[in-house]
Image 1 (tube, rainbow, N blue to C red):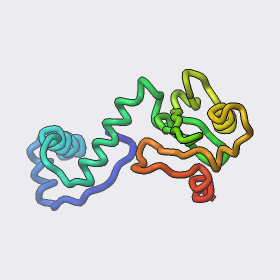
Image 2: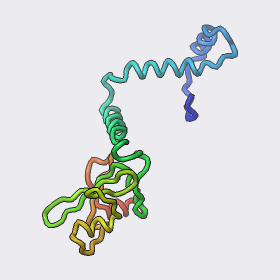
Image 3: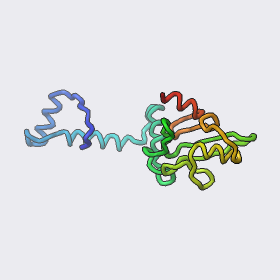
Length: 157
């Protein structure tokens, strides 16, 4: 059994019937109940559920697929107060073109090399001095839209 548990009330009659059917009044029937719920969840996994559930499951499946390429979704790159989980994409517009980097295995990778946010912005801008907070846009794996890095930083405070 998982160490994170919740308690779900069931009618006493149902609990008593389960204990009687197990044949031992001292048996812990929680394993039987857990097995019944797991069996139900496995059997109905492909059923049509709510759009919210389907959306969450799709994000979870995408994060699992990203694991080998980008690293553990729970890890990433810490940019001062902003955490960029593995799989995060970074974008910078410069001279009418968009340039993309990604966080993979706790590093920001651009053209096969690791960069800090500041060095990334400077590299994309051909060595000129840039402010990465105002030049880089961030799209974390669960985000639907790009956010300016400075806005992400301000919303963290």
